[in-house]
Image (cartoon, rainbow, N blue to C red; front, side):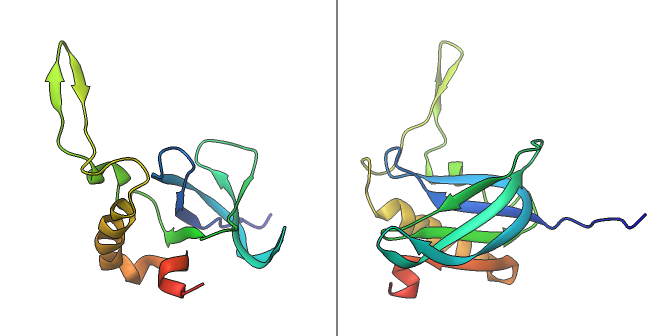
Length: 130
């Protein structure tokens, strides 16, 4: 029986929740560009999340922000927040900027660009001039 090698990946993408960047680890199935609504070349990634069986697809249309890195345990998006403070056994983290501020992405881009050797695909609209 042939052993199937699944490539481990980390996916970073923009979310609709307060303009943040999410990080998901999993096993790559496919990625690329395809038609989606009025967009002829919307980026997508199809993968099976870590510790899950059912594959998911992340597809971005308007101002896509999608980045795929090789491997797991890459840059954590929580580093964009302050160290936090503890009150009554609860840790509170505060953002540096208000919700939907593009400086979150600018800070993250500056941090993640140090890992270009791990980039599998880069579908960030700001860098691609889409």
